[in-house]
Amino acid sequence: MVANDPSASLSGEANLGLLLTRLRTERGLAQKQVARLANIDGSTLSRLESGDRGVSKEVLDRICSVLELDRREELNVLVAAGFLTEDAARFLLDEQLSQLARLLSDPATAPEDAVRLRQFLTLALAYAEARGY
Image 1 (cartoon, rainbow, N blue to C red):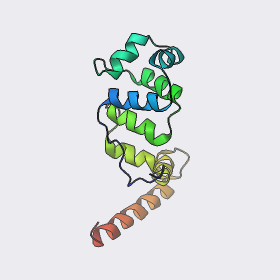
Image 2: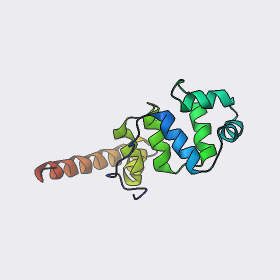
Image 3: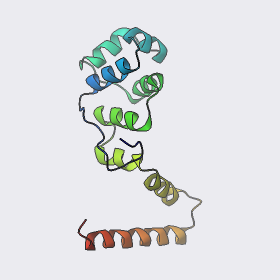
């Protein structure tokens, strides 16, 4: 699977606990080790992996950092935790779409340039619709 291919499937596992357990074991890390490095209680990670506990975005970010996840893996975790929709994750996975969104929301982008970029988007969407996409 190509890391920046937005058409590739994101999360095959909807269960956050199973996903975190798989990612941790793939890296050869013990629960206690990940918990200590993420500065959380070991029982918290255990309950999270067993599906008995929800998680804050802050704690999840620390766990992801300890696991050294790539962009796709981190987006999968955020989807499984309910912090992102799959559509949003696919959007964020595509670097060109992310760059365009940053340009459109950047206050330094001149308003007339933002209008023109949006016109290009409208044209691209009309073209895709005409092609049956």
